[in-house]
Length: 438
Image (cartoon, rainbow, N blue to C red; front, side, top):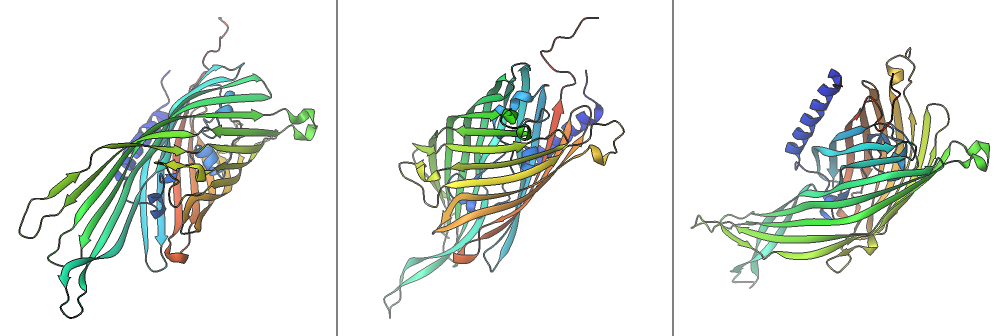
């Protein structure tokens, strides 16, 4: 059966939006992404993002949630999800401010239910793990060869350093869920992390007659880890009031990233020459160990249209190993999020806006960034909307407004705006379900 026209049009629009976003990438982001592996992405999907990044313990057959593979066990139809992402940073050091923004593809997941009776659903796709996207300027002085004849002190030459960073790490995953009984759901996902991070420093002389140059550091990374999850329901055995509650757990193993690095130096020619000079270092290999992570969530889904969620997750980054040592500016991180959703009405007589799903939430996180003893924390206010299309297909929007950092200690304060647009397409009929012959 062909997809309805509106679904095909929206699919095309999403693909174009992702392509435009990819082309616009690199226009700049947060200065803090210069540290570690960049901004670590907590990309659970548009539904959970609108609910304060919470939902480890929530089931919903309409969505492929990236928080825990155990939540896939209730998916009863073939589903495809693709997302585009806009992120803007209004950053200030207390004296000057800049607004930098970018758009990009935000991942795609494909789910195929194999056995509804056993809760077996296979999911595969790609989601972002980290993003590096900074664009900053600093000034510096270096001594020259000229010596003041009176003081005997070397003159200094002023330089401006323009530092930019692009790239990041993508997570490819394939996994499945299993529910041996109604009260217990399990999930396992094998994840392949890969990507390239580029750091570029342009040395721009501030004195005439001097020359600058460009240093480019390119690092390619790849590694494998495993995510396991579990969701428990059926608490009515303890008390009837506990029937709507669910408890979820998720953990990801330690990851060993194999790295390959190359450094290139481009020197501008002296004033009397026109040929640029280049020096490329030998290719070197190394290892970066990302520590394990874990999370716990509480869900509440009564018989009505409301769903509530609260999650806590953490990662001991002090156990990270970058080429044999703990990197500068890294600390243990954690995140707490709460959120709610009011699902859309399924009544045929319901008005258009009553068919929409509405979401809101709040999230607070201690990021893994620590600059000169100043801990960089982030808060986010989130909201979301799901617009029903044909059948069970949905067009989702997630809005996030937040902030992190402070201007004290010569640091930077970010005000953050994020918009995720996600298209969820559902097959008309469940797969692997036998129908009676007429």
